[in-house]
Structure formats: structure tokens, C-alpha cells
Length: 325
Ligand SMILES: Nc1ncnc2c1ncn2[C@@H]1O[C@H](COP(=O)(O)OP(=O)(O)OP(=O)(O)O)[C@@H](O)[C@H]1O
Ligand SMILES: [Mg+2]
Image (cartoon, rainbow, N blue to C red; front, top):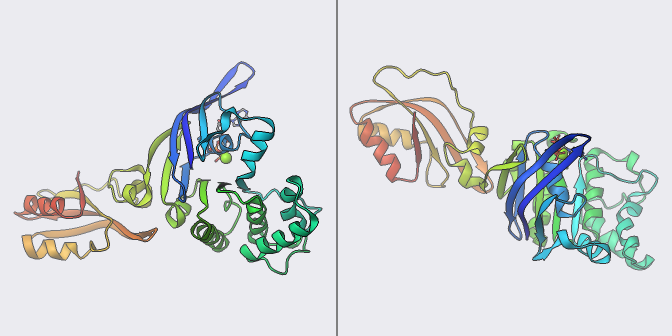
């Protein structure tokens, strides 16, 4: 649905050149929720703004739904943009317009009649759970309600892609969860492809199918969230499952990280190891997380006993990923 091909973006500030994006290649599949994770200044906003051409890449191109958007201008670009909704961290609502008027705004631009606008606005208000708020002004709404207006407005043009730039960063954790649930619901019910950027791991954990980690304008890791979370050495897993780094294994023991991402795999594996191989398992650190609809876990363990090598082999040959330190 969205392809970034060798995107570079260079900003010029006087004498200085700032390389915001440095050869980004990404492929967002239709119907998925794709997260771009990265620290402040990594280039996330620049990247997402290339999708609707709020930002023109210095080189490379972006394709949306098979159409190369980077070569469009004028009417063709406006039409393409209509199929790409966007929501923002600070909502960007017009404070002098009511909720209904804010949502109707893009419909006015594309020339809907007053009657059609009214019907569409009612449908959108119901979709985002804001029935009864049509005549309220943004100042009378909570942050979560404002973002629901933002979402309704973004969906007015019946887009197949929704871009979200830190849409929950200004919200408290509970409101964040409800907005993320709404996005997941819209994704599932309407097949809406969502590209969202965030610096919060929790957002990726709760709703993303795939993720790319951006660092200094480069993609340093990408893939399915549950696959990456179950690889002990991935950057994502390191964020999901913090390790204790300064542990010195006792003499005669083996320090290992054991990861799994399968329903049938569980932490009771350690009981199995103890019984089968007569080894001692000392759990140093670890947890099990729900990622999408999978249970993903990672444990740091210290193993001791004569059959440790066989136990590690057994883990390798089953559905576990093991890293010996
Ligand atoms: N209009 C601009 N002019 C000059 N430099 C810019 C401009 N916009 C962004 N940059 C620079 O490009 C780099 C990437 O910025 P960008 O806003 O894409 O980062 P970000 O990952 O979205 O960060 P944040 O999490 O803080 O929003 C930064 O070094 C930033 O200073
Ligand atoms: Mg940003």
C-alpha cells in the first residue's frame, strides 16, 4: 500500500546540511498497522510527511496504492491526498468551528452538498463514538475526544491510508489505550492501512503488526512485531525485555537468554529442563508479554549441571530461540 524507495531528505540551513532521511526503503502492506519507532530527531515526522507530500524527498520516491505520489502535482496530487488521512499530536482542530464543522471541513473542500455533508458527518461521529457532540467546540472537549474528532475528519474523504504522527503522545495512558483501540477497530472493520509514528514502545506493543526502527535517518531494523520480539538479539526485543547487564555468572554455570513466541511454548519449559536433564535453572530476569494476539516471552537464565549442553540443544531443536552469553 505504501512503498518508500531509497528516500533521502536533506534540509539546508544556511551553510549546514541536515540529512533527515538517509536512504529509507520500507514496504507497508495493505491492511496492516505499521509502526515507525525512533528517538526525537530520528526523522519520523519527515518520513511520514513524504507520504502525502507535505515534504518532498530530495531523492527517491514514494508509491501509495501503486501510484507514484512523488511525481504528482496540482489536481492529481489533491485527489491522491484525499485518499490519505492524517492525524496529529496536537489534533490541529479549528477552534472557532464546532465538532461537526471541523469534520465537514474536508467535505466542503471536495464540494459535497450541505445535505450530503450532514449525513456523512453523522455517520463519522457515530464511527468514532462522539454522538451528541456535534455542536460542541474543541475547547469543550477532552484530549481523547479532540483526537476522535481528528480521526473523524481524517476519515471524511474515505481514505485507504491513515497517517498518524504521535497521535497519542499528548494523552494519558488510559485515553491512549482507548484511542489505540479505536484505530485497531477501524483498521479491522474498514481494512484501513495505518502508518503510525511513535517514540513509545507501548504503542507498538498494543497495536502494530509490523515495525521499523529509525535511527539518524536510517532504518536499523524492520519486520513483524511478534517475530522481532521473539528474536533474543533484536533491537525490539531488547526494548521489550530489558536485561540485567552487569550480572557475572557463577563459575561452572552458563548464562543464556531464552525467547519464545508461540502459544504452546511457556515458561514451564524450565520445569521440563530440570526434570529431563537434571540441571538447575536460575531465572535472573524475564517476562511474558502479549504482542498482538501472541504471547511472547524472554528469560535470562543461569544454567548449571552436567547436561547443560544437551539442554541447550533441546531448546534449539524446539520452538525456542537461545542465545548463550
Ligand atoms: N523544516 C526543517 N528544516 C530544517 N531541519 C529540519 C526541518 N524539519 C526537520 N528537520 C531536522 O531533521 C531531523 C529529523 O526531524 P524530524 O522532525 O523528522 O524528527 P522526528 O523523529 O519526528 O523527531 P520528534 O520525535 O522530536 O518529533 C532533525 O534533525 C530536525 O532538526
Ligand atoms: Mg516528529
